[in-house]
Image (cartoon, rainbow, N blue to C red):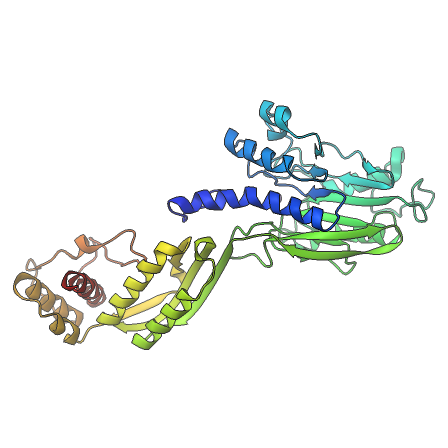
Length: 414
Ligand SMILES: [Mn+2]
């Protein structure tokens, strides 16, 4: 999974964390006495991955001490080029790792059956889970799940067979796309659960851990490592205790090591900058934290320079530190006193004076610019200075330029 905002080695560690999660899940399965693991789709980000990614995933899976069942999802469907039939996967897949390639029930052991709904392409035109459950419960007669399931079912209530449904995709009650033909219908699953025909529905696709409906038996575990800011309770896996005739006991366990966090702050003076500095310094596990800041306020030139320096320093230790542009509004005001402090003379002093005039809204004669403001832009500056070579000179750009000049001058002074 590539994240364009992760620079340098951070992307490599983000990638490695996904492999580490496999080992953590294996360790947890052993500690908790789990009989087996199901992964409900999107095991792989795409069907075209490097040999290294596939090889490392299979190495990690080989170390998992219990059987693992992998469901193809929309990212890794069973299309002709599926990763699951690639020569490397077929050759190196450990014997205790099984790919759920059809909706035929799979016996994990006597008394435990998986009803799985693998994706065979990126855009199914039907509720694959509903179809798989209908087919498994009805045997050769295959009524739609919308019909009452006959009680004469060979393995119905009263038998000791535990049936676990393994599916991928959006459940209809949570799907914003009302017209999606592939939505998983919840109501028939809840009826089948209530009637004791199935005992648990394990779902993948949502990265947020989510209990669906009121049965307590339909869950998305969420992604075992966080992938975005919008996720709720990511980084968990679910340990599910199941038995015939008993409600499932579902316990989340945290295995993820990365964190995505958003901080909103009002920044109007040196005290606010210092408070932000303390907050940033106090964040744990910075090298595994993607932090975005929503900053609002107005700062003098010196405080603005201090903020820029703070963000630059902390940007080096966080996996990623960025301003959330949509929710950031920072203005700078210049009263000239800070620049006087720096005691700039000559060319720089003249440039500073000109920028100061412009910052106060005083017009500067055309063709008489001591400094080209556009040359001061820094693409990678975390403060995202908003200069544009095409824009006419304006007071805010001049103020930002003053703040930048103040910062550079201080660095030279030190
Ligand atoms: Mn998906």
